[in-house]
Image 1 (tube, helix red, strand yellow):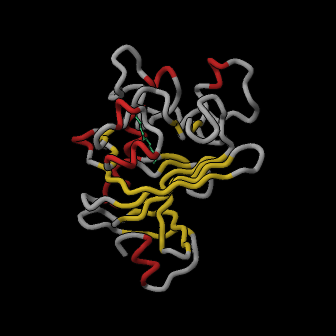
Image 2 (spheres, helix red, strand yellow):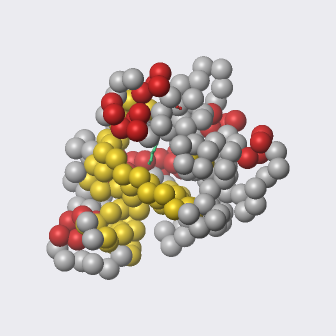
Amino acid sequence: PRDCQELFREGERQSGLFQIQPQGSPPFLVTCQMASDGGWTVIQRRLDGSVDFNQPWEAYKAGFGDPRGEFWLGLEKMHRIAGDRGGRLAVQLRDWEGNTESLRFPARLGGEDTSYSLQLAAPVATELGANASAASSSLSLPFSTWDQDHDLRGDLNCAKSLSGGWWFGTCSHSNLNGQYFHAMPRQRQQRKKGIFWRTWRGRYYPLRATTVLLQPE
Ligand code: MYR
């Protein structure tokens, strides 16, 4: 099968590890999450801080971590799955009081020649809470790591001053690959390095768990 969605269409209803082969790509293993609305590929998961997400570009490109625990699937595989058709992203967030938030939006992911730019249509970036200046038109946001700085800040390397690799704009929107904190650090300087989604629990709230899923168009 090309992806989790095709597995779902073939009748598979059990979530788990499967081998897929997107068009023009070698086969690889992914975690499929089967839901009532189809098959989704899990591209990111945080739940206990067992994996170090402060990794360089090559690691974010290839993927790292434990498919049964915390992991990052890898930008190249994500690009192969979404292809140039793009797809739907689902973001699931959990805080320390047991509240959850779930977001869904259409997106495309460019190849390495675009630094794996996340492409969002005009209204989506605004809905997600991007800064007005960045979101007035459609948004194409390259991926950044501490050793490959493509963020929108000229004076700062977001990945270095925060932690992990992400589609950083002005360092303040979100970072689901930040440092995992088991308890709220006292200092803001520490807290801002954490896992955050500003428009949900705010810039300085380190989240407990996240999952990001992808379904090709
Ligand atoms: C800013 O930093 O305010 C400008 C950039 C806003 C970015 C908005 C969207 C980023 C969301 C990334 C979600 C990716 C989920 C896989």
